[in-house]
Image 1 (cartoon, rainbow, N blue to C red):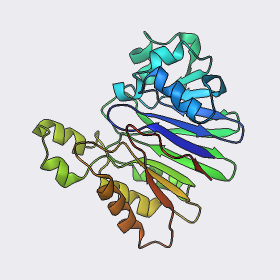
Image 2: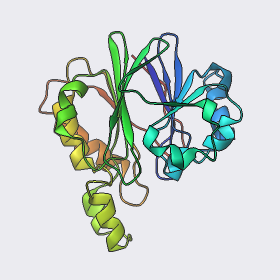
Image 3: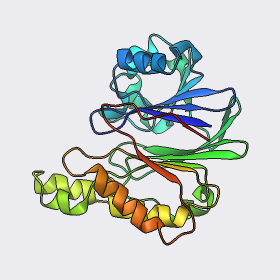
Length: 253
């Protein structure tokens, strides 16, 4: 399995996932032209994409979707609950609603609900034979009922949005600080580190820390939190950052 972040952060999100014979995009929060350019940088074109998965309808996840949809024949998968949010930018024949589990090419994909202040926000467990990917951003917490299903996976793409001290001492108004910290906000470095300490296992090869706040976080703080937390385990996956304005390296396992 392969994953590459084209962009990750509050100004736009889009990732590329590849299985043995299946290629996906997750979210389209950057411009159509930037998506096409990022695909080209990986020797790909939009025609290679088999499906587009949308996590939720905040602008930083769908800003480029309307234009993208006009240039692709790939199915666009959404939660039925947010159809009203996108019905004016997508034709009905382009859309598929997420079932509890689905097969796209050789990939088995299980959507799961996340806790965010958007209608029916979701993450994904994507499995390709012996390799697996947990993809989760934009959530205030990760329910413990998911832990068994999400444990010991090969790759974790998970948000590490803010450092709590930087957020509380930063420029955001109080109501916005409370939103970010709340159950329908975003994961802090501390929460992400604690979750990963419990979730990773011997099969885990890579962690991509995503959706870092430009105002309320530093890459060094996010990395330090996760590295410190997992030192007590016997596992040592590669940890990298998914950035806002720079494509990540291609992670292949």
